[in-house]
View 1 (spheres, rainbow, N blue to C red):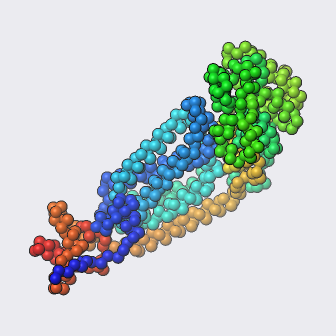
View 2 (tube, rainbow, N blue to C red; view 1 turned 90 degrees about the vertical axis):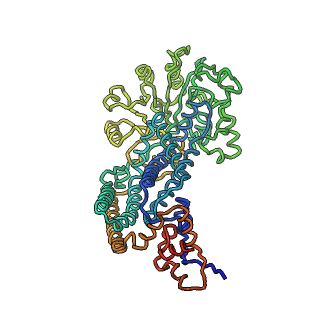
Length: 596
């Protein structure tokens, strides 16, 4: 009677099977190998590492520019003519790509830690290339079309650098286990020196990184300046359609310092409020007056402008994802807003005694009132009864005439110049984008008594950084959010930060040193090969047919009644080398195969 039984009993290795299976689709024991990784696979590992750092950078960047998502969508609208919110899909795609690459990298490092040969599956390689190309294209697109947005990274580091440093230190400290294992296993002195030097360079650099970290939030509490004043940029556009009476009223509910608006002059000489150079985005002009859709707003008569609906687009586009938070009554009110006249805004500002920030964009050259629009706007303000000291005037056009007509106006500029130049022009307020401002600029302008207003600030972390920097006021689409920020998100005295820094470095150094000693003790005397491995490796240098036969015979063999022969065919289970199953068989088993 023929009897079948396994030649060797293998203990289940579920974790190792999942590790090699997910990474390289090598689920079977005989598919795994302890051989050195090929140069081709090492190249793919290097590509994986590069992809990890690029996707990390892109994901971090896109997460931090959340403050400017609406600006990004408006930019796309100006290019395509259609309002599509791509900010969230891009964020989700960046998160998924980064997570996928991170998992692959962790699996690769685990392969190295347990001594398994790297063999990335072709499907992973394809996805890796796709993600890498997509990230490179995305970064190149930002560089070409939105270059100034890269400044967000430098600003965000002021808020996150101390925490990123701690996270990087933890990651590199944990990496010591793998580095120490490779150092202990290797018998090549050159390899050991290279590994040690590279790791020491990285970790010493991390130990010293805090010397280069400069954050305004690392300061004593007593040195913290007053809370920056909040200006409603086009009102409260997260809660109501921008530049409408409802938007300005909603902003006033949160006690802002002022209201900011863009003033245009209609074709028949009526000042009104409109941000864009077209009516298409914020009105229903394409439905009511299709021929006017491509016209500049200032080239349209007021009788036509006041007939347009300026609120339905807000409910449809939901530019800030806030429409769902509105009550049915608020949605009804928002959907019935019309274009707001400057006189209506001034009346509201006078009643509430708030400052108005007025930007006056230039008119088209063929506008009938292109030479007198400044005069018309100033006269409208003066006749409204708003105190002149409550008006901040943003226009370089005919500034000297404005200073004569309304000497109480605060003259402001959107162009970054030296404090001496601004003073010579009579400018007391400077309005800059937050990426254009440095701590040195803030100190310089403050010392010269020039008020620095920063736009557009919507996120508490950014508001906190600017607060710590000493900025006096900010323009915001979210006054309802910033009003609820009672204190900077974090504030750390320099002494406490130094203590955290030094303590973290000492703990990391102690852990790394202990890991290297432990790994040297565990693996220093273990060889990566043994005589049986050499014999089995030599056995596989045969034809593929012989190898297939040997693998099958190694798994199951026909056993006769002779127990001696069965014992000769069995591999010693005490060796527990999981890579032998696919590399060969013992000499006695090989002889038995050919005898059969």
